[in-house]
Length: 433
Image (cartoon, rainbow, N blue to C red; front, side, top):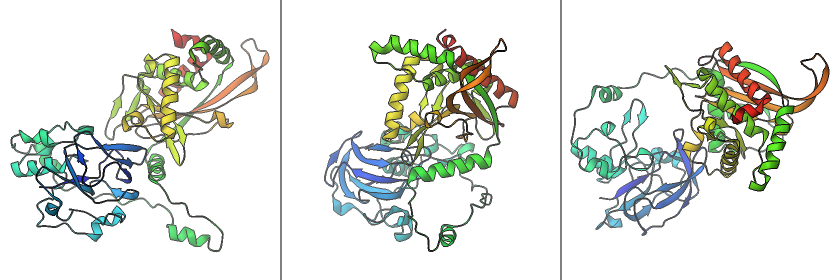
C-alpha cells in the first residue's frame, strides 16, 4: 500500500518548517539515503533523506510552502507494483499549494483509507519517530514502538526495525506514558495583541515584518529564559596586555601555517579549562535534576541574519588554540549560511557572547537554556590602572559579566569560575601547559 512521507522533525525544537526545495519529482525512483528535499527548520536549512526505497507517487506540499507542521504528509511513496490509482486521501493533508498550518482544519482524515498509518506514539511526553510503514507494521503486529530502538536517520524507526520484532506487553512505563497528561498551567500574559499594538500606531508609517522560524524560536526561548531562570550576575575586569603580546608572538610564528588566533579563541580556551578547574560550573539544569558534564563543551554565540546560532565546540579543553580557531571559523561560517546540523549547535554547559568587536564595553547576556551560565565579553579598552607596585599605569582592560542560573551555580562557585578565567587570560602561557 502507498506510504505517506511525513514532514520530519529535524531538530529537537522543530514544530514546523518550510519545505524550501524538492530534489525529486513525481515518478522518480529513490533508495534509502537519497536526498528528497531541503527543509528550513527554526535554525538551519537541512537535507531530508529517504528512509525506504520506492517511487515518488505524488507530491502533496509544494516547494516554498512555509509553516508545514511536523508529521504533516508532504508526499506519497509507491512500492513495487503500486500505482497512483492506489493513492487515497492523505491522513492530514492540505492542498499542495496551501499553507500546511491550516491542513488539519481543511481536510479530515479518511476513515476508510488503507494508506493512513497510526499516529506516532509518545513516551514520557516525547514523540517517537517512525516511518509510516513501520507504524502500520507495528499496529498490525501489536508491537509497542516505545520499546523499539530506531536505526534510521536521527533514531527514526524504519521497516527493518519492526519486521522481525515480536509483540510485547506494554511496560508500566509505557502504560504510564499513555495516560492523559495533567492539565497545563495557564499561560503567562504575553502583553498586548498584534492588533492592539497596531492600533497604537494607527496613522503612522511603518512596515510589518513577518517573523521567520528562527525569530519565533529566539523570542520564545529568551522569554522562557527570563521568566523561568533565576539569573544573577558576576562582573570582573581582565588586563589583556600580556595576552595581546603573547597572541602577537604566536601569530607571527603561525603565519606560515595560515593560522591567525583571535582574542576570542583564547577566551574559549580559558573558559574550557576553567570548567575543568571548577567542575561544579560544568553543569546544566534538567528540570528535576542537574547534569554535570565531564568534558568542556563550550557554545559561542554567532550573529546571523535574523537571529543567532550558538555552535558548540566539544572537548574544547583538549584542543589546541589553533584547532579551536579553525573549528570556530568553520562553525561560524556555516552558521551564517544556516548550514549547521542540530548536533553542532545543541548542547554545551555554558556559552560565550562577545560584543567587543562592536565597541560594547559591557552588557548582561541572557542564559540559553539548559546552559548553567553565559559569559558576556566587552571590548578591550585602554584605561588607567594601579599596578602591583602602587604606581598608576595604562593597561588594556576588558570587562566580562557572567550570567548565572542560580539553580545550578551558587555565587561563590560562579566567582571561583570567573577567577580561573581571568587567571588564564592574564597568564596565557598557562593555557599551553
